[in-house]
Length: 130
Image (tube, helix red, strand yellow):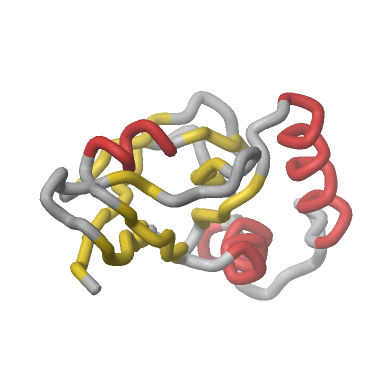
């Protein structure tokens, strides 16, 4: 199932947990759900959806991979930092499924991280029984 994620900023963190949970079939007793970002300038992670932490994520990405870094790829389309940030974040997460529900920890959420927005992206969600 494909989920659409829209952002209004260049770098944005969006909680997609509820949308991913809706994509999990009710009849999966035990299994795994994978959320995959088919884009090279966005990522997906599992972490806490807390406002200050989300801001910290954005600031940390900027410190680790600054926007202006003299990157060679910028001569093509001026978004090398977004590609590098997405590589650090990763393109997929896998979450256990129990009784048709995501088996996330108490503070865990699935977070889509846009690195080259604003854009509308897709997040591909698949569930496989164990």
